[in-house]
Image (cartoon, rainbow, N blue to C red; front, side, top):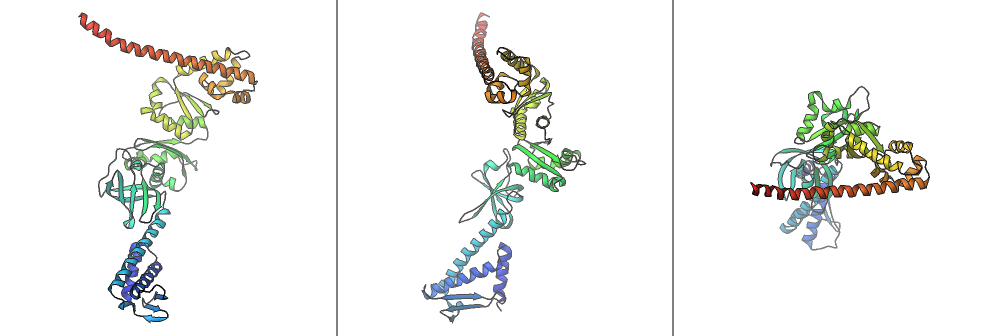
Amino acid sequence: MNQELLRIVDNIARDKNIERESIFVDLEEAMISAARKHFGDTESDIVVNIDRDTGEITALKDDEQIDIRRLGRIPAQTAKQVMIQKIRADERDSIYAEFVQRKGEIISGSVVRYEGGTLIINLDRWAEGFMPKGEQIMGQTHRPGERIRCLILDVKESSSQVKIILSRTHPDFIKRLFELEVPEVTEKIIEIRVLAREAGYRTKVAVASLDDKVDPVGACVGVRGSRIKNVVDELGGEKIDIVRWNESSQVLVANALMPAKVSEISLCFELGRATVVVDEDQLSLAIGKHGQNVRLAARLTGWDIDILTPDEYNQGVERLTKCVKDIEGADDTMVDKLIALGVISVLDLDDVGIEPLINELDIDSETAEKLVTGAAEEVTRLADETKQKQAEKELAEQTEPVNNEKGVQKQ
């Protein structure tokens, strides 16, 4: 009984996660290659069989038994090279089969090094993961040996290696972190309906509960913010807003714009636009730093969101009213219908076009065309006014330094 051979096969199978049978087949093929090298014969029928239970090797050449151990040094070297190549190929197949099933999961790894901006991470069983620069959270750097968690984004197989692409910026990374930190998410009691993220800065997560007794926002935040804190710490301080999901688009838009308080929302389904009115003191909150809050809210809800103050909203309605009243056959009722349709400015009326007005307001095509034409003319006039005011402002800014210099000379 060849116990040494069996022990080696078992060790390789365990360490490299390769099927035991595959290793035996590789050994047999390597020995056949060695025999052909020894005899210099590619035509003969050479068969090698290894007994899976005893490890005994039987080799036949044209049905005559040969001693595989007496082939010499060069054939043995050939067998070694073939064996190495085949085991490496089996190992690649094993790694690919394992990690392709784990796509979308979170995995922990140890940072190895940076290569041209790409972060190399050591994963299980000597497998290496690659995190391109675009999948790294902006502003974060990692030291060699540091343990980090990542999302398995993709697995690609090539002739030389298996490339495991990792990510910390993908929205699914946030989802998986919540599954780890919030048992109710794992148990499907709380559902993450939609998520919008700007990695490294801010994320909005809309959650809903399938159990009326469970508060989805409270469960995700945790006692004194313990659960959300663990997620934020993992992301290096990225701000996370937990938003309560609602089937009503108006309610969802209002929730998505929090912490800003919304006064009024008008939805135009034809344009996919939500016009949101907020008080002056809530304007900066609603828009957010560099427009981040409103941008994420728009992505979360799927609506193009316009933020207006009450004065801006009233001015838009006044212009719309004036434009509509100038059209023959139109009255205040027409304005009310337009506002109910979500059209609250001449710009909206110009964008909506003729067909929706005919279908939704039940008016004739001639009146609808006059309304849209009048709105287009008003939009053009407003654009010209804006350009003129901008030009006057720039001229005043250029003139002011000259006047200041003259004033200094007179003194």
